Image 1: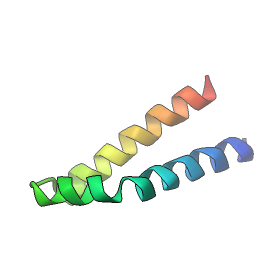
Image 2 (image 1 turned 60 degrees about the vertical axis):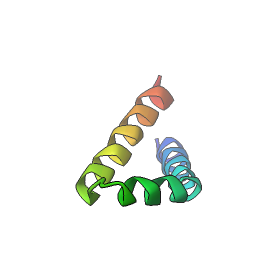
Image 3 (image 1 turned 135 degrees about the vertical axis):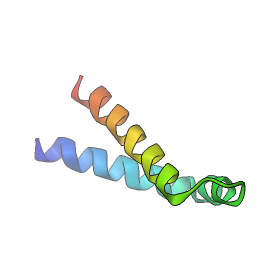
Image 4 (image 1 turned 90 degrees about the vertical axis):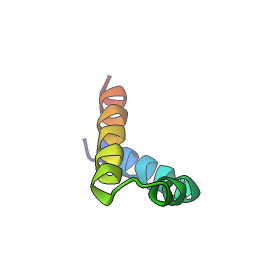
Amino acid sequence: MVIAVLGIVSTLALSVFERTREVGLLRAVGLSRKQLRTMVRLESIIIAILGAA
C-alpha cells in the first residue's frame, strides 16, 4: 500500500512539474486556483484508480 501511494505521489509531482507552462497558460486565460486544484485532484483520482486496477 505504501509503495502504491509513493508511486502515485511521484507520478503526480512529475506531472505538475512537467506541466508548469500549461498551468501558467491556463491561469493566464482565466482558470481559477480552485478549478486548477479540482483538475489536479480529478487527475490524481483517475491515476489512483488505474494504479489500483
